[in-house]
Image (cartoon, rainbow, N blue to C red):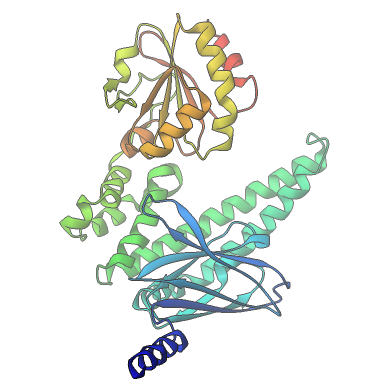
Length: 387
C-alpha cells in the first residue's frame, strides 16, 4: 500500500509540475480588436509551414504555446491584419513578450532571453526607422490600390492619377529598402558569422538574385560577406542557393536562345530540355500549392491532346516528391511531367519570380513568347499564334 501511495503521489506531483520544454508567447498589442485570430506557425520537416497553436485576442492580449525539444524559428500571423509574418526565435522552456500597435504585425516587437532573438533584434533595431517608413509607404500604396480596384473604369483621369501615385510610392519604397540593405550590409561586415548572420545575408542575396535591376548594386558587397560563411554552410541547400543567386547575372528573354537544363520524371528517369527540340515547346513552371497553376491544368490537358503532334508540352515542378506525385495524379498530367529539383540557377536564368510562368520555344530553340500568370484561354491564345 505504501508503494502504491508513493507512486500516486509522484504522479500527482508530476501532473502539477510545469512542462519545462514549452515555449510561451504573451502578446499585448495596442488597439488590437477583440477576437482577432493569432496563428503560430512552425516549419515541418518537409519545409512547409504548419499551424501549431492559435489564440483569440482579448483586450489586446493573447497567449501562444509550443512544446520544443530544441531552438526553433517560429512565425506569427494575425489573420485580420494581412499576411505579414512576425519572426520569433524560440527555445525550450523560455518565454517571449510581444508588444506594439495593431496596424502592422511586422512592427511588433519581440523580447526574450533567447540568444537568437536578441541577435535578431540587433539587426532589426539597426534599420527600425526604415522599417517604419516602409510600412507607412506600403499602407498608403495598398489603400490607393484598393481604391483603384474598386473603380469600374480604370481609364479615367482619376484612375490614371491613382496609378501614378501608386508607382511613385513603390519607387519611394524601393529607395527605403535600398537604405535598409546598405545599413544591414554595414552591420554584417562588423558582426560575427552566425545562423542569424546567414539568414540576414540570405534575405538580401535573394532580392539581388530575383530583382537584379533594383538591387544588383549590392551584389559585390553581399558576395564579400558570403565568402565569410563556413564551408559547411556554403555546402548546405541554403548556401548553394545563395551562390546561385549571386552568380546568375544573365536572363533569357524573348528572342534569345533557350537555356538547357536537366530534369527527372516520376520514375527517376532523366531528361534534358534540348531532347524536345524539333517541335514547339510549351514550358510550364508550376507547383502543387499554386491556385492558378491548378486552374490551368484542364486547359493544358486539352491542348496536349489536341496539339501533341506539333508541340511538346513540358510541366516543370519544384515540389517535394510526395506532393509532386499526388498533384500529378490529382490533375491527370499525361504530358511531359518533370521536376527540376528547385535548380535555382535554371529558374533564375528564365527569370521566374512567380508561378505559373510559361515559355514558348521554337523548334530550333528560340524563345518566341513568355508570360506569367493564368486566366482561362490565355495558353490557347498565346500558343495559337505559332500553330
